[in-house]
Length: 231
Image (cartoon, rainbow, N blue to C red; front, side):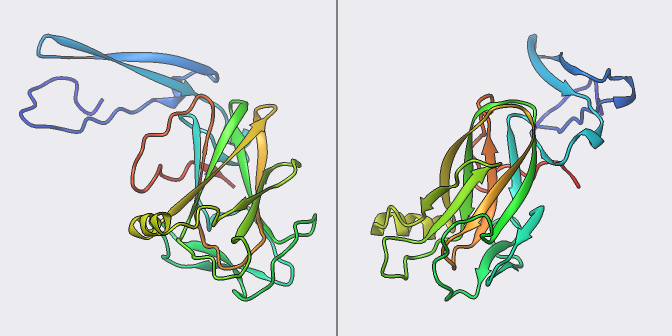
């Protein structure tokens, strides 16, 4: 603890560190108690001490994984190219397909896609929140689409413009973000690959947040910070 006693008149940040050399290599639970004004507040601490070499990619922590879109593990280009647009986004950059006037792409094994290596300590149902820049449906079709899947599962085709109402457009422009949600299932913990498939151009992906069954992501304007990544 950066401070273990004293008087706080307004507010003060106290830093808590862990001496990892003394923590067993396992999944542990601990707690500490804060006593103030004759009241006691118990803070629970979940600790998972493992070797970093056991992890590939972004690691789950506190029930979620957060990724800035430009930090993909692999990019597959075919006839089009994944392009990073610097500083376009709430936190980092955006990623989109170029050229912007390319035709709709049918998903196949050789489809252009971004892959993100993930490591989960849990299994079960997960929710994937994809953060996009607001984009109107400038085509004559039913809406701009993308594909998303985990490992070898059949990719889900998501219609970005399914809600094409003026109210929804005003809301996403005011927020400068549109968040799309898909649900997937992990049969086991460990290493997995999230695959983001390009279907229509012009969609700009900014961020990906994955919430596990045990997670409960607190609402915030920027979303959770990027998770630890072991390359």
